[in-house]
Image (cartoon, rainbow, N blue to C red; front, side):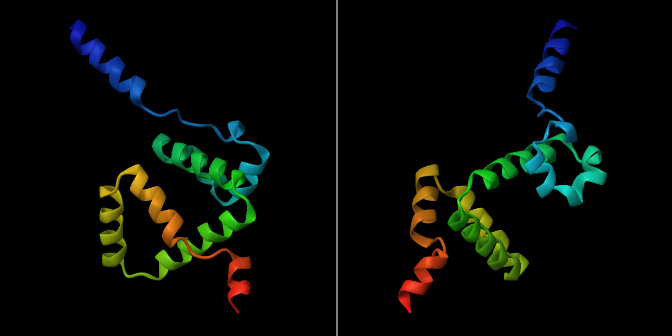
Length: 117
């Protein structure tokens, strides 16, 4: 029985915190306003990922935000099979390989596009 409790506590401790709306910064609340009515219904893992994403977004400079938007737009235009193939290949890369890919193949920053003309 003691093993059962230990296992339960271990699993419980590994669960991400359910971040309440009030814990979000005013900037995060502004970004996530469309989610506010259903925020409490989202699974804790999803709230955690969204929270981390907004933190990263708010730390980005304008060029990094532009790249993120451009990458999102391109992914949305892909057919689902291609998106899944790319996801699988991305998961197989090491963190160093991912970093290198971001540096090599990220879309150009807006001011770089003007310099090429």
